[in-house]
Length: 245
Ligand code: SF4
Image 1: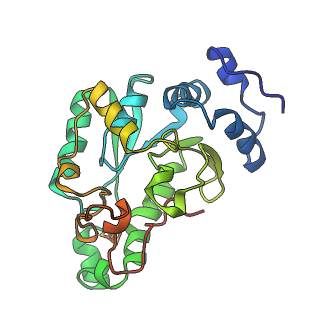
Image 2: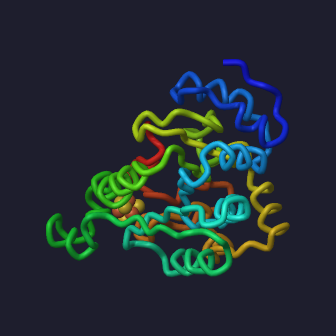
């Protein structure tokens, strides 16, 4: 595949191979890896249009803004596990009010009450892998079946397991292209974008919750601790499974 230099909209789409797979995604990644998040978003929108799903945990609201300002009505997928902090749900509702995006609540097959009845109360405390599988991993896989690409806010600085994460890759598990436009961002980049664009914020971040998931499995982190140290603390688990190939 010959990839032309980056440029306008035509050059952005000309970046694309005839077929998406691990090899062609790696070639595109090599060209986009040092591009700005705005340029990566421009490319993603020019390439996939509405066939793209934006995953957002509502820890911050950068991706809904980055893509909503480029593609009106774009789907923003929120994993509505039934266990979120009120502040996170409020942030989702604020995004729906302020940005021209379509919030898609991706729900598990079982409500919390039905899961309690079938598996016992507070499964997250006994078997968080099974709980995440049923409330996050499986529902997301089903939701992604309708798209050609998905976007996440994962960053290399999040944890050592993400330290070499590409910007564009083939997601073999879901059978579509995975795009991480913020992969190279650090905390200062996040703050700068939020200030420049006056974005709504999840108030938990200012309280010390530097990586926010479901309330029962998230705690504040101490100064100097890894941001994700507050996720499933003491349970030997660092990822819910949606970013594991
Ligand atoms: S983060 Fe905790 S409550 Fe949420 S799905 Fe995973 S185990 Fe269940």
